[in-house]
Length: 320
Image 1 (cartoon, rainbow, N blue to C red):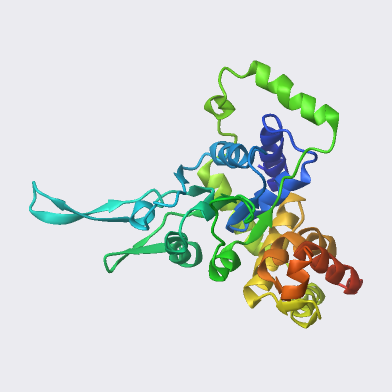
Image 2: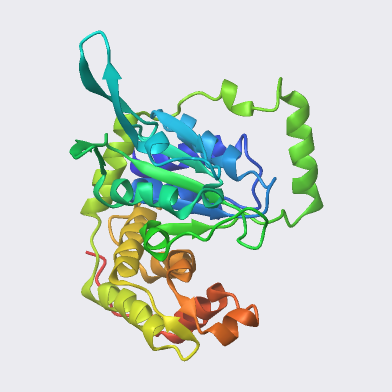
């Protein structure tokens, strides 16, 4: 099946269940899937973060597990541990819920930093270490995490190293129109319970997702597009209001997601608009503002948007 048709089928299927202002946010989530990247949602409670993640997981036909992060959650509750098998008089590995394709880490910032850090190796290397033994995770492996705003009670800030491992950070926000708000209520009337995902069927298979990931790796990127991405990333390190700019991983993430967006739009090459569409969500959580601007409440997204607007868009690039 044509890759664009396949991607549209996924987005349309999500849109049939979840009410969003537009399909762009859904395409950005799908970009994360195709780029084999990890996705972080930050929003106030009740905006549908968990529901949206569950819908995507079920539609893609892959295995998924959910972990509800709480202050008493331990690293072994995520990755697993060795337990004594009395029948065989030896230790055996009891694998944790991280052994899946899609891991929903719900309210990740309600757990202690030590527990949050248990995900670092899995997110970067697609493997975990239990009692000195290393175990590879099945492909695809994607962490989809939700977190509440840090100012809310009972939350802990994510370590910078872990934030950097999230390929993209998204926010749903409140719906802008009254009609969309009414549509949520209309759809709820037809649900048999408060969990509409019970009746969702797969529209693609696990192999389809792997094929889309392979297609993204084939997407051509012109040298001027590479330079464009690099200029944006480097500008985050030179901006006077930024104390710590984006790491090179930020540039790699922007490159991977731009290739994924090209796949979604049915192209085999990246254009500047792919980069511009994703830059804010890819880079804003990787920078740290000077304390004075943080205290003033300046949003890093505003700074990244300012940088993107100032960098000249390449007009001379070869599609192939």
